[in-house]
Length: 76
Image (cartoon, rainbow, N blue to C red; front, side, top):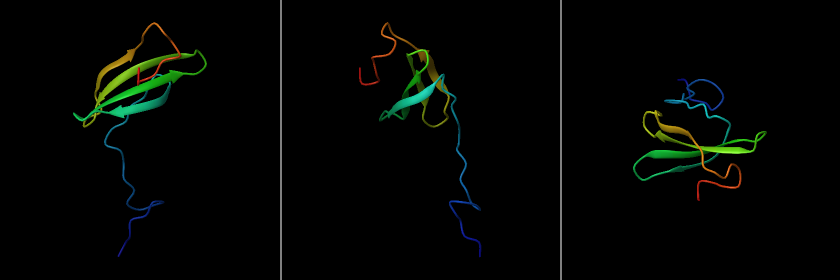
């Protein structure tokens, strides 16, 4: 009998992936299953936001920016 292992046989694969425009800094998940994310380009000191469908991973919108480019976050 084979056993599932964290290091070998039986590893799970993600249902979907998302490539952000920078480092994913923070995420929040809504009760409706949407994923709101904050990504940061640390070299350019810029932040942008994205929203994904939690089931399919499809972007609802991406690369949203506001006037303040660095000192702002999802909670704002």
